[in-house]
Amino acid sequence: MPNPAAPMKLDITTGLVSGARQALSPNCDDRPPGVAIDLIVIHGISLPPGEFGGPWIDALFTNTLDPAVHPFFQEIQALKVSAHLLIRRTGELVQYVPLQRRAWHAGQSCFAGRERCNDFSIGIELEGTDTLPYTDPQYRRLAAVIALLRDAYPAIGPERLVGHCDVAPGRKTDPGPCFDWRRLRRLLQRCAGS
Image (cartoon, rainbow, N blue to C red):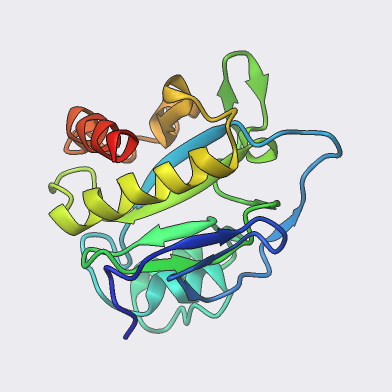
């Protein structure tokens, strides 16, 4: 298993993050020409709902989810979705889509009057639910990932960090009320100061 505290480096040419386990998803495509990456969307996911640690998020994002394993999987087996990155409860980082490509994470969405957030955003999934606190390793890893992304994509300012619930209100609730935005901001200030 990869070290959850492994140092990270972004290869801007390939869009791959070293220190991340690679599980590349077919559920992505090219971003529209000339569109800059200037938004991070934070999500929450658990499969089956409320369960952590299994192989099912990888399976969903790589179109290999077995609907016979759990009744919920029958409902979602036809979905073609992905995210750029996942941070597991342990802090392990998994990459599904190279950052310069468009992951299919936000769906029907809008930010600051711009539709189709997938075109200009990076999607980061946190293994969790709306009703349980996220873990210390997740917050530390998330802050480090955001700092790395901001170095590579300077258009991602402090106001350009949102939850899925912010770009798809009424349709999505993640990362949920248990996500501690203040804590994340404090960690990001420390990253900026180091």
